[in-house]
Each structure stands twice: as structure tokens, then as C-alpha cells.
Image 1 (tube, rainbow, N blue to C red):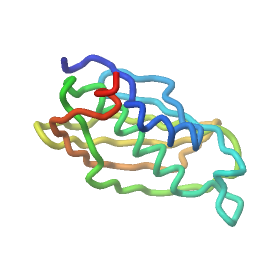
Image 2: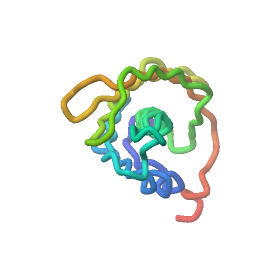
Image 3: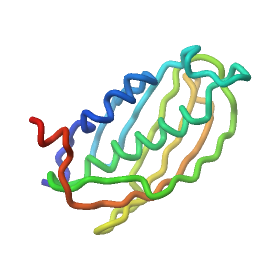
Amino acid sequence: MKGKIRAVPSPAQGFLELIGLEFTRLETGFSRSELEITAALLNPYDTLHGGVIYSLADTGMGGALSTCLGADERCATIEIKINYLKSIRSGRLTCDTRLVHQGKGIAFLESVVKDGKGALLATAMGTFHIFAGSSKATEKK
């Protein structure tokens, strides 16, 4: 059932809710995710913690790739290279992710993270493993 757009599996939802991340667009090979910066997400220097930006990119990659997986396929991060270009303290972030290449067992994706005014905050490239398997969330349904 490749090409069918499906929701991100529910185990991810707890973490997504924790940081306030939501998918606002899912298309074949593409995702847009967003989050509002809150005080809980700031580091000791009162700027957004880099781990939040990383999570936005990583989750966006998983979301974009999930739109191209079969019903019996799953994915997991192998590695991500991220470049932080600008710090931010408040506002809304948008992460656009696109699938660059998908093979039988490996996929390569790119994410771009911007602030609400369109300023570039970070770019990321990631490699994901594609494998057969079921998710506990799917089995519970």
C-alpha cells in the first residue's frame, strides 16, 4: 500500500504533545511540522534548546518517509546531521521535510527549519532504515 498517507504512529504522540509538535501537512514524500516555543523548551541561556530543533527535524523526516512506506513497513533513524544557523527565543517554528531518495532498505531526507518570519534556523540531512515489522500501536487497534 505504498503512497497511502497515514498518521504518525501513536507512541510518538506522547513526545510530540510534550514539546507541542504537530504535523500541519503530509503529502507523499513531504511533511510540514510546526511548534510554538514555550518557556519549558528554552535552555539555560533562554534560547530554544537545540534538542527541540533536532526533534522537529527528526520527527519531520519520519513523517515524510512514513507517507511512502507500505502498511507492513516501519522506519528508524540511522543518523542525522544538523546545522544550527540562528538561535531563537520565542515564536513559531516550521519544519519542511522532503524525501530525497528511497531505496529498499535506506532512505535519505532533508529538513529545513524556519521561524515565523521565514528566517532559516537550521538544516538537517538524515538517513533512515526501512524494515518490515509491526508497531505496538497498530497491534492494539
